[in-house]
Amino acid sequence: MNTWKTLITDAELLPLDRGLATMHDGAIASDEHGRIVWIGKTTDAVAHENCRESTRQIDGRGRLVTPGLIDCHTHLVYAGSRANEWQQRLAGVSYEEIARQGGGILSTVNSTRSAGLSELITSAVQRANQFLEFGVTTVEIKSGYGLNIETELKMLDAARAVEKETALDVSLTLLAAHAIPPEFKDGANSGAKQYLDEVVFPLIQHCQGKVDAVDVFCESIAFNLEQTKLVFEQAKTASLAIKIHAEQLSNLRGARLAAEYNAWSADHLEYLDEDGVKAMAQAGTVAVLLPGAFYFLNETQRPPVELLRNHGVPIAIATDHNPGSSPVFSLPLTMNMASTLFGLTVEESILGSTVHAARALRRDDDIGTLEVGKQFDVAVWNTAEPADLVYRIGDNLCCGVAKTGEFVIETT
Ligand code: NIG
Ligand code: FE
Image (cartoon, rainbow, N blue to C red; front, top):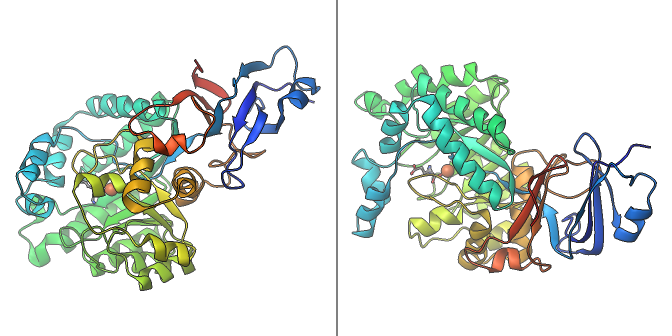
């Protein structure tokens, strides 16, 4: 039998395959491929024949060890800042109004178009490493601030570089259908159709096999239901998975449409109705809640959490990190917001950033729980109490991170 590569002993293990049940005095071992090969009690681990001198042994000192967190919705690649716009909002101008005046997403588009690839990589890598420090080991990254072929591809290249240059796993999403760029705005039908035909559809076909999913912002300030459907049809012909920004500011019934296309997830969902919830339940579409955007935009309409629970829709939580509506760097802080602002239980917030986030990315065979056969992606926390991960506001309890069996943040 093989020697174990990494072994954590004396941990309060939170595997998350059975809710919040922890294993006291737990131990977990990886093989040389970075997979979990053994989970059990510390006394059994140290007596095990595979535990030899070459095994790297880390003393958990009674601290909580969980799966690495998963942020399943971010816009981590961009240039520029929207602090000015935020100050306008503080003075009473709405997010929609700013978008209509050519600010909002389009202001980040201008900065991102002007930025060189290496500038985009440097800032995205810096942000990604901050995510890692908060216990995140997998992150989804969307394009969507290019809105032309060249810049959308540049953003995707920057996101790929994040995977190469950091310890994070990256799931890539093409969000060319994020807004209609100014150069198409004067056309018929607000230029949306022409933009889709000339930029979005060719990009989708080009990205076949090169990204994990295609996303659309379905909203009055972006793409309507009919246009969203055209994007889904293109994604289908390119065999790409589908996700959607839906029901954030109004109810256009985007989530229901996405569910009809077996979307991996529908995200935001503040204005989702029961019809949409039922459609998502039937399709197995994950509800990704983004309390950072709700908080930062000072929204008042909460997503229908009770309906999602009643219909058994899996609920994930993500930062939606972006410069305009959610400049948040901490997934644990976002979990606190999910519980405080949306009423999620501690268990729902923890499962939402692990198990269900893995499902939202269709990576649940590999990550999201600590089970034999899955990736040895773990976070070590400076507490033995699972509720502390959600309860403490702005604190960083993460004191160690291992990715595929290697400690990338050494436990202190
Ligand atoms: O997920 N809702 C649309 N897109 C982003 C916001 C992007 C921006 O304002 O820059 C979001 O909140
Ligand atoms: Fe988003």
